[in-house]
Each structure stands twice: as C-alpha cells, then as structure tokens.
Length: 481
Ligand SMILES: Cc1ncc(COP(=O)(O)O)c(C=O)c1O
Image 1 (cartoon, rainbow, N blue to C red):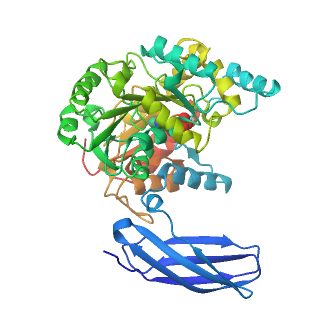
Image 2 (spheres, rainbow, N blue to C red; image 1 turned 90 degrees about the vertical axis):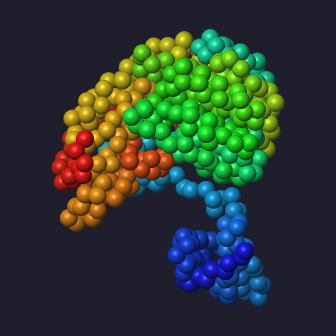
Image 3 (tube, rainbow, N blue to C red; image 1 turned 180 degrees about the vertical axis):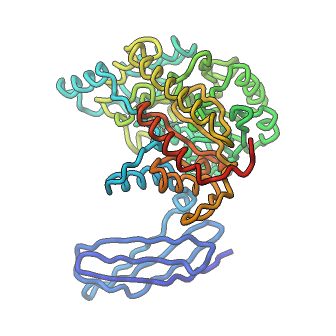
C-alpha cells in the first residue's frame, strides 16, 4: 500500500545556502528538516514533492532548484534502513548536558559511558613511540599479526578459549566489531534476541541488518538476568543471534557460570542460533563475581562470536580499538565488510593495545587500581540510594553503571514542571532542578529505571547524590516500598 503525506514547506534561499523545513501534516510522521548549501548562484525552490511508502517506511522527496537557466533535481530521500534506526538517547542527553555546561550551568555529567581515568602511562607511551618510530602506515585489514597473536594469548590465558590469529579481527572499537558481526550473520527477517535492559545500539544494529530485534525483558528482582525459560519460549527457526552482555551496560549484572550453562543448553538445541558475547566490561568486575566467556562453555566455541576491546578497562575510548574472535568462517565474513568500509584499525592504537595486553593478567596493577576506585564509588552510590524511599536497586557486580528503579516516583506532579510520567521526564527534571545529567532507562528498553554512570570522582558523586536527593524532596513516591 502506498500512502501519500502532504507537507507544509518553508523555504528560504540566499546566495550560499538554502534551508528547507519539511513539516509533516500527518500525526503519524515525525518532523524532519534538512539543509543543504550550494556554491552556485541564488536558487529558488520551485517544487517539492514528498511521498511515504508505508511498507518500506521510505520518505522520499525531490527538490528542484533553478540555477540560472539550469534545472537541478535533488532527491532527498533516505534509505529505509536509516529511517528505521533511532538516534542514540545517550548521545542526545550528553549533548544537552554539554550545551548547558558550555552556557555556564554547573552540570554534573553522569551520562557518559567512559572511564574518567587517563589511559595508563605505559600504554600512552607505546602509542607515542609508535608515532616517533614512523609506525604510521596502513596495517593488514584484520590487524597486525603482533596484536592478534597477543589477543590469542590473552584469550587462552584469561578466558580459556583457543584461537589462532586468523580467527581474530581487530576493528575501530568494539562497536564496529558488533555491527559487522550482526551484518555478517543476519539475513533479512532473521531475529536477533536481546535481553533488556540492553546496550542502546544492539536493536538498532539488528535493524540496520534488516533483522528483527526480539526483546526479552528481565526483572530487577532477578538482577536483570535472562530467564532461560523465557529464552526457550521465544526461540523460533528465525532466531539467528542471541546477544549477551556480561558485565552488562546498563545494569552492571554479571552472568554466573551456572546460568550461562543453562543458556548454552538451550542454544545447543537450536542449530541456527549463534551467540554474540559482548565482554567489553570483563575486567571491571567486583569479587566475588567472576567472568565466564560464553565461548569457553562446552559446545559453544563454534557458535560464539566473542567481542572485546580496550575502551573501558584500559581507559582507551578515544583510541578506538576492539576485536572479534570466532570461527574463521564468520571472522572472515566480518573482515570482508571491514575491508570495504574502514580497513584496518589505527596502527598507533594497535601498538598501544599490545602494550595494554602486556600489563599483566587482567590488565595488571593499572587496571586493578581503576577497578578498586570503581568499586568504592559503587558502594557509595548503592548505600546512598539505598536510603531513599521508593528506590529499588540491584547491586551491580561489574561495569560502572547503576540502574535504579525510580518508577515509584512516576505520576508525581511538580509545580512549574508538570508530571513526571516516566524515565525521560524524570531525567529532564533532574537535569533542570538538580543539574545532574543521567540517562533515561527507556533508552535501554526499561522505562522503570534511570542509569547513573559512576565514571566520576567520589567527590563529584557525593555532590550529585546531594543534588538528586534535594530535587526528589518535591516528588512523592506513589507507592511505599
Ligand atoms: C556494552 C558495550 N559494548 C560495546 C561498546 C563499544 O565500545 P567501543 O568504544 O570499543 O566501540 C560499548 C560502549 O559504550 C558498550 O557499553
């Protein structure tokens, strides 16, 4: 079925640029705007035509501009793939907080997903030396043999999984590794099984692959861990990929080995099903919790695509380095995508990553020091929010996030602000009233919660808690817990 949508057009033109705003007159369409600039002579917009094909979710428009005597048509339609993807809310709130900070508002930013620590000196030095020594050329697409060999050694020693360098693909961040894996193994119509709360990008990556995200909710009372019975009940012949993230962003939950074994038993009964195990927070884990790599479980090596990276544990977010380990057939397919998009990762970062893996077991002293600080912060936040009426907590066992259930505050009405109707309005309220930037849980598939990143100093966290408590005084928990 094809439905036409009409738009009101506001157009202005000047010598250098033209800005057109498309305002849908149908409620079912979201507003969009575009701007383009022209190096050419003044142009006038003669006509603009927009249609929407519902089944393809395709918004198309043609702009015809007359430039002197030439007529130029610009098709401003976007791929249905792009139209199906939601922009990241974590980026939106971070941008909003940054704008406030730049305007002089003393915002405490606890929305970002990156450590506040500097990259350990030995790693940074290795990067600097790489530049000094002229190690600045393209590397092989899959990454240097030196780094892939070091990764194989790490995976064997720390995770008990055997790989050869041709089963490793080094990418520009773990994010690229995950996207490439999803694109490589999913066919249109396949289902990607994602336990919620999830890292914001998983469902969108599934959509980019024309696959369907199937979201499986978990409960805070069960530490946000996937119920194997629920998993089993949702698997079909279309199920292609199960994405597990442990330790988890946003909940900090760590999957115990026993539970992973139960999940592995179910996976083993579904021949088409693969598992993408996102282990990027592996080293940021609080004893007695321990990390188990899914690929190390009996029978799971052939089914598992293990993703890891250097951003979190080694405080290397800006170095953009991650990797995928898995059976050669899948890794080679991901490498093919990478070879036609970005090619190999930064040569300098790869030298730094070799140094990171050389710091010792689980990152040695440098990583242990950061993990100790994260743990102190976690304990402080869990105790502080534990005192607040109506807040539910599942104590994180890893990563650097706290995912708090504030839903008992929903429904509160605040003079001059309005009703706190869910996680997004609560975060807006806390940004307005307490000047603390947090991320609404609905971005992670759970509107009952909000995410606090504790990748900030204890002093900053203490100030944030005081501000949040102050702002919550005006709200009444609807249900006593
Ligand atoms: C769960 C999870 N996986 C993957 C990534 C991507 O990390 P990278 O910086 O290596 O791309 C992130 C970053 O926030 C993350 O939280």
